[in-house]
Image 1: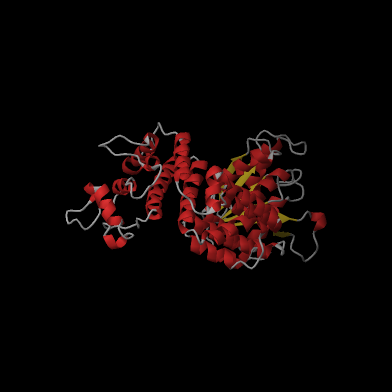
Image 2: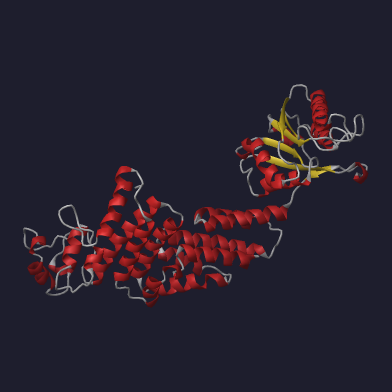
Length: 459
């Protein structure tokens, strides 16, 4: 591929980036023109007129072929550029790191080219400089770092390899490297639980032609897996089940997740509780303290609601009436907790967490371990002081916008585990996970394991 007039017409501001290598501007003063000027002249011949030239060199570096070393070469190169582009802005970029150390070179080049991440037209000469410089430039391009810019890497053939009538410059693409790096980036998004970002990355990859065609179907399936995990993150069991049910490709690492979706459909309460716990678990695993507190308290309130439902008290935003309960239960509750009886005598107050816990203590229900779920209130002591502390921390996050300095994730995790241990799960798998939460396919640990297994599966 060569530069075209069409490209130039749509880009009034164009930047040319080059390293001053051993062959620039010539191998020796007055010698044959080197790759930097060759590419610049090719761009000019194609109708491109760069408005800026970035010139990278290593100050103080000697070169036996040039008196004055790379400083002299840089000065000669800049002079040659100004002869060809007298109106262009020429910006020297000193490289004050070891030019053959890719890990040192990459951040310098990244900083020099930072603005092209978000827009702008950039032509890069990759035929000058050390192999490590070329490696750094290709990594920046391959990882999608130049997401918003029009960045083209060019390669120049050496004079001895040029053929008459044939272009001696071409785009320096490394599609397999770029594909692999982009795939790694998609898995990185999955590993940090950015399911929407992972889905977008996988779908973008699957939409093009991959260097390894055998990956095509697998990458498309990975996009669906990321979407299913997004639905699970949203605690929508049904949507996640539908997405995975539509997969036509057998993905062995998904077996535990598919098993959960298949068996969880008959245990809605158990599934919702564990999906809610998974939001807490992922936040805690990343030390996102505020999110962990919010989801821990959300889990607590959900457990109280589901505990009440389990004992015949339906979730309602209104008071409970006799017809809402099993025969005779309303009358027994009215006798055992008379202070929750409405003035009409025909309804039981049931809207707040306090009322739900008070009803759950009624002997008619026979609910064990209610204290575990009771954080008390300002008017009475907390039956579960650690839970009260967790709710207090959460209130400071939500109501004051500050993360408590005395917050302790170990205390929080023990409270969460105690809540789960006291809940009467119905499904065998839900009961088993109480002893080993990391075994849940939606846990942070399990999703990390799944990501590794999917990466090995796709190859």
